[in-house]
Length: 68
Image 1 (cartoon, rainbow, N blue to C red):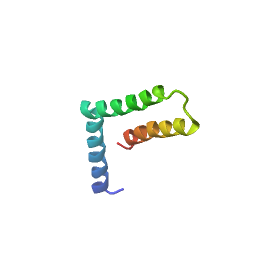
Image 2 (cartoon, helix red, strand yellow):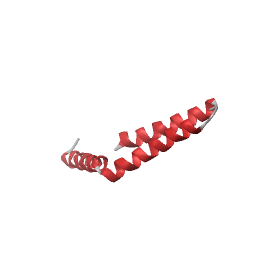
Image 3 (cartoon, rainbow, N blue to C red):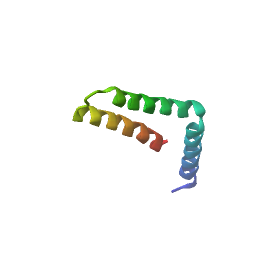
Image 4 (tube, rainbow, N blue to C red):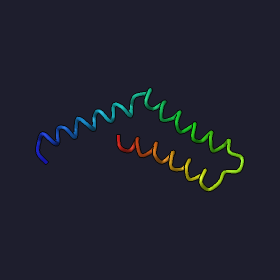
């Protein structure tokens, strides 16, 4: 990896860390996760599809955080 590419990757990592440390973004992730969990709690008799949909939504939030 050349120096320019390495520097870009370091800068990208630092920007991602600043985003993850931002209370506003952290609150947004928490709000989405709580909404997913509230939806799960509100379904009286969840079907397999309901559970899978909520599971995938939850994993998508984790994936976005992981990409950052």
